[in-house]
Image 1 (spheres, rainbow, N blue to C red):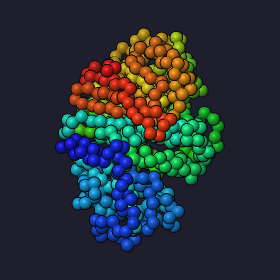
Image 2 (cartoon, rainbow, N blue to C red):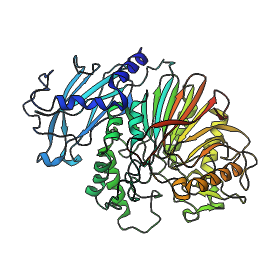
Image 3 (spheres, rainbow, N blue to C red):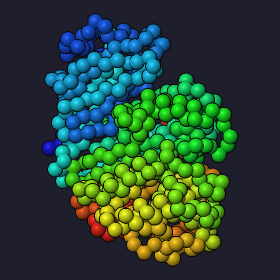
Image 4 (cartoon, rainbow, N blue to C red):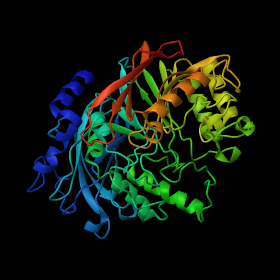
Length: 520
């Protein structure tokens, strides 16, 4: 079975999958073995390096998008590489051997569509130049359509590079997972000085400076190790361009806003292992079916988003927040999501969501914490959660962005009965788990331990739908879904130490058919 194979290989690779990079050293001089006609093409680029590693993205039952980058300084135009894909870690008996082009217009990035592979199987891959090779990467294709096996998905978000180290990714690499999801804020347009200094590339203005953000972040060996070990699904939020921007503007005036936003999207599609929709080249929302157990819906809360109400205020009462007609998703994406949730045949519907969906009240008058979340789009939230309450069973929303940890229950209005100053719901719609930031500043970083604990108690007091909160830890989440329940394990990792360990700080679960959260 695929599970046994995966666990065996994980054990052989060792902690964090660091040894996955070993073949790059072994192949670095001389001629790699297993050369075939395509692999030995005389036109392969010479002297290629792979400083941003390799990735396998958006897995399918029959393949994935395989990615790498060859810096353009090594060649004048496009560069040819070979790609090898095999079920064997030593890349013997390859199932795919082909050539690919690192295009100058895409800054030397490669997106190779690996097709024709077996469902629910492990594969290994490598990019090769004439005299150098990339590290060896690993990924797993999605489970067969009839699989009833448990599903394990890793989630992370908000990884400001200067604010902390990426031990989180070393531990994610060592987890036994079907795939890893980034819930947004993979890079930051601004910088907060921290243990890794300061990034002087502030608010990138042109495409080269936007590309430089990804190059900086991908210089981290733990991040590269995670990507080399697991299939990856990235979501886009706001810091990939500008904090709290909407489809038409930013909170501060900025010349050439649309042109700069277009450049940010160009850099994201270059640097991420995602296929593009031919009829909608900036679309990122999609669903992945992991057997009968899970259908994963990944949404875009930024590209189609109306401007935030009440001047994007925080901890305020804002009547406009619930005004009809304002949209987070846009009409096409909303119709796609509603139809997908209604028609899904999976036991569990998991929504990968960049911004908090449940209400978050900060004061006795019903003040909502942020207008940039679903709290600023109350009418559309009510429409979506009312559909879930009526027609969708077993909805689990996993969310990023907030930097703090929350677990709560979703009601049809976003608020449980008895929430001060806000319309309490009458029907349960699902549950929501909000994972902490990898390194970006959380409440504990700004208010200290005592201040964060006081804030935690206030959030529990004003939000009866909230069942667990921690505003001090950093780390990631692992969602394990079986036929009977869905469990989120919160992993705590100290961002201030590159060699930090990991612990499981909380576990929360929801049983099939309950839409309630149990802290275990």
